[in-house]
Image (cartoon, rainbow, N blue to C red; front, side, top):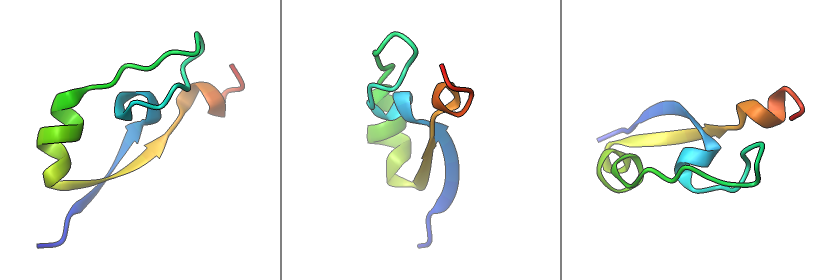
Length: 50
């Protein structure tokens, strides 16, 4: 089965890219939904130079 490509904020995947150097890892997104989708990580904060 081909996975659906889905854009997602990098911090939700556990990357420390937030304006405060933190992350917002979401285990449901990575462990449960991640079985069915291919994530395309983006960083909104980095895109607007925060």
